Image 1 (cartoon, rainbow, N blue to C red):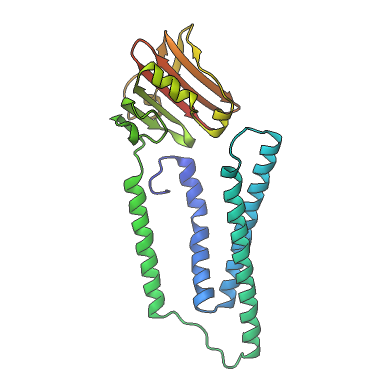
Image 2 (cartoon, one colour):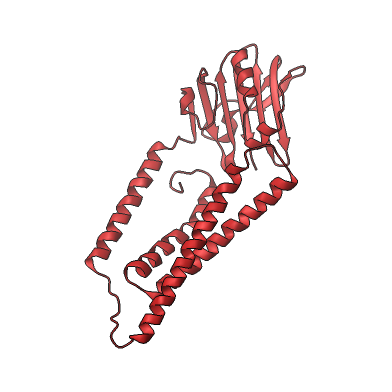
Length: 269
């Protein structure tokens, strides 16, 4: 995902985190297939650190949900870090036990133990790993939607919009920001909003549509990239609007009755 993102925060975060699985894979291979006690111990330390951090995130998330109930499916937030943390700790314990067994064996047979060497099979395994990562990277690059697009089908948009929407244009900005607009009839727009738009948090707020009684402005997709031409905002005089805001997060939608044009804008930071 680091190779296809235009989001600088994701790029920096991915660059910081990427060395961890690379280092872990290297030491795990040496510890498992070369019976290297030091590599197994290093793998255990990395897994304990990653697992502990994941369980810490689980605890923080659980605390936030307990003190600020949102009426959202908790499992989507709690189960992944809990399972990941538990699995990492279990495999860390396996590596620690394996390193201790090897240390004990080496100390008892120090004269007869040969140092592990890298063989042709190791080079072959490394080549296979490189090919696999390259193929996955190519797949992600080809399957990831572009940062922006104009006049595309409804199924080529990185957010959920009505299947009957036409003449769709969108743009993704940094830190999870997205703006989209499309043509649709009013009944379909109302149904789309009522089924829940934005995040779990905004959906749980159960904000209802309101009639536009005064000029209502909403940010357009053009505003999120300097490569796009057109006005950054649209002002609607007659129609409907949806507005949810909390701290630094917001989800907005509007329907222009005069043009049957719907507008959507969301930011989560």
